Length: 412
Image (cartoon, rainbow, N blue to C red):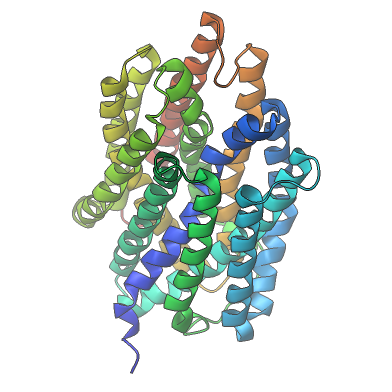
């Protein structure tokens, strides 16, 4: 006997954890890994990351159409995508490049991100139907989001700290991460297999319903501006801790603190949203993030504990970002295009584009300032790193806050 669908929420959490481990941590670990292991330049890595996101401009809508075309075989399509994503991750971190490293980096990321995009589109489309099955009042989206995004944050926590754990044990850190990821991906696919194809009649209506809707357009802009600060800090986190704080070895514990704070706070933000609305709760979290992260600008050598406090506060704020904004967008999709995959293709593209744009804008700038990973850096290079890491995210978050405040939602 299978469990009632409303009781399969842990499977959503585990699957979200695997997807999250294939997203944000790649931008944290992969660039530094290829710089340190193969001598690839920051500028080259940033260019490749940006080029891959340009491919997504065309690819993500096509993947949305593909998800709709394969709806009768959705379980099989998801299984193949999971296998591709796991294989790409193994190739990225556990295989010595048989071709020039920058091209291998590009090829493996193409596999990982293509599979990731297809799975994300299918997963969030299924989530709309699932939330409707749970509760027609709209609270089902918040309940599902608490499980899904908290699971995602836990996945990020584990992915962010695993390389440090393996390094401490004397094992290959990134190869070990890739192996664990592949095993977890298979386990997650098995857990959620009963959900695919149930109660979901995916349709392909194009981007029209989403882009013609003023609220959806504004929410996509909010998502773009709100994801950008996380993209900036993710791209530069390891460099900031190692070089600006002069604290090599602390990257893993500080990353873990940041994401554990996010995971722990996510359910609390969700419960608060049910009381005072998701929009007000999300705005409060944005203010907390700006206030907390602004202090990172003045940090320097040895300020580990001060940075730990910043990680704790800004991580807690991230829990609201990753839980409430997807729930708000999913609720809007249920109103204007409940079965259309294109809305989630746009959402997936926006989330990834910010990470790529951060890479292409920041990594070459840092290299141009004379920054060297793991080497001796001038005060100019270190100050450039601080400005990019701390000031830029605060400005972007202020923009996101203003856009959200000006967006009228059904709950207002």
